[in-house]
Length: 281
Image (cartoon, rainbow, N blue to C red; front, side):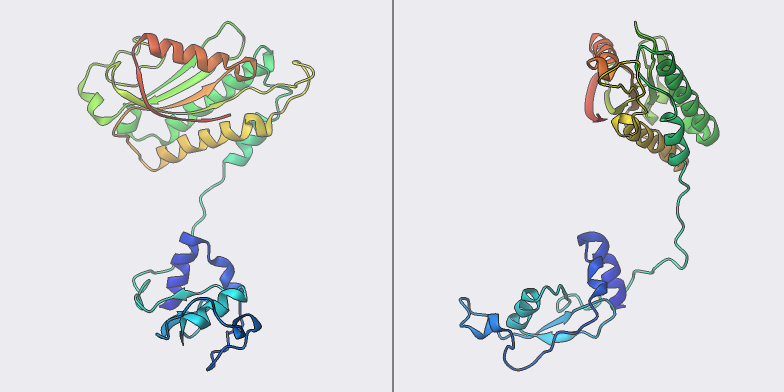
């Protein structure tokens, strides 16, 4: 049972490293540490506390002084005096399953383009590939209910690369008239509905030569793939938002936020309201 306590706490407060401490702290009358042989500046309680020094170890009764000595020696512990049965309901999975990792091939493909510079042919191709990937995830994973709420748009700009906006309406929107021509992404039931936006920029650039090689794994290929896989994960989980949710993949960020500025400008003209935004740059 106590092992389950450590399993839970290690996930919450990062106590996993305690498992490597195999030694037990000697519990004796009096303190053996030189640090604590000196007169203590504070008065410790003589009350005994039930303490577990490592996962699976037998709990020990210790005073506050002895707990302090453990800390001084770099030993962490869990005081279970007031919660001796904590974790008794926790059942460790017999065979933990790991989710598939399609992020790796997506990242490999995205960074395989010579450059994703927003005014290059390969920059345009990369945005079209990403658009097709989003559509494929939608067709493959979206439930009937989700599919009726999703609208994926390829957004044109004055430069070659496209931005992409994938909007997911909320349940209440199904009762309203759907007008895909209302704006760039008609993902909300009314222009005033607050929208939660998650975004990343899909372009990359070689800072010394705009048309030079720029695979852009870290800037911002990782953010783009993370956002793509977040979209995939929500579809696979059957998630349906309670308010409009949009995934924005912006073109032309390296040119001065060109794609995102154009989209936000259109949203402002349509009086769309953002309740929250999260963007990877």
